[in-house]
Length: 165
Ligand SMILES: NC(=O)c1ccc[n+]([C@@H]2O[C@H](COP(=O)([O-])OP(=O)(O)OC[C@H]3O[C@@H](n4cnc5c(N)ncnc54)[C@H](O)[C@@H]3O)[C@@H](O)[C@H]2O)c1
Image 1: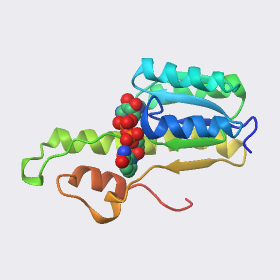
Image 2: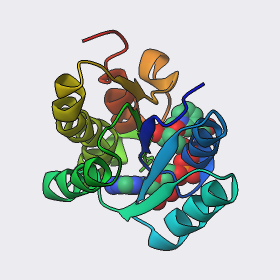
Image 3: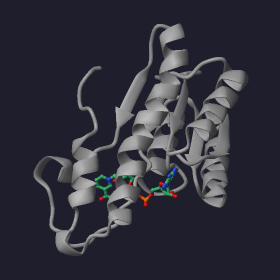
C-alpha cells in the first residue's frame, strides 16, 4: 500500500498516465495530476477525489523547469513530501527520416527526454532530503529496437535511464 504517499504523474490528463494516477490513488497515494491540458487534468483529479484520495491538478509543461519547480513546490507545501514521480508525458511527431524536420526531432526530444530530466532533477531535491523516493520512466520498446518513422521517438525513449541512478 502507498497510504499517504505523494505521487506526481506527468501527462496524467488522459491515456496511460491517467490510469497510472488512478491506480496509485487506489493503492492509497495522493496524486498530482500534471498535464499541459487543464481540462483533462481537472477531470482526472476529480476522479481521484471521488476515490477518497487527495489530488491536485497542475498545468505545467515538463520542458519548462520554472513551471515544474512551481508544481513540485506546491506539492511539498500541501503534503510535505514527494515519494513517487512517474515521467509519463510523451508525444510523437512521426515522419520518415528523410522527411523529418528539425522541429519534429526537437519537439519529441524536448518532451520525452529533456522533460524527464527536468522533472527528475526537480523532485530529486525533496527526495534526497527525505532520503528516499522512486522515479519511474515510461519508455517504449521502440527505444530498444527502433521503428520506421520514429527516429526522434526511438532516440528519446532509448535515452531514458532504465536502472538505478
Ligand atoms: N500508447 C502506447 O501504445 C504507448 C506505448 C509505449 C509507450 N508509451 C508512452 O506512454 C506515455 C503515455 O502515452 P499515451 O498513449 O497515454 O499518450 P497520450 O497522448 O494519450 O497522453 C499523453 C499526455 O501527455 C500530455 N502532455 C504532452 N506534452 C506534455 C508536456 N510537455 N507537459 C506535460 N504534459 C504533456 C498530453 O496532454 C496528454 O494528456 C508516453 O510517454 C508514451 O510515449 C505509449
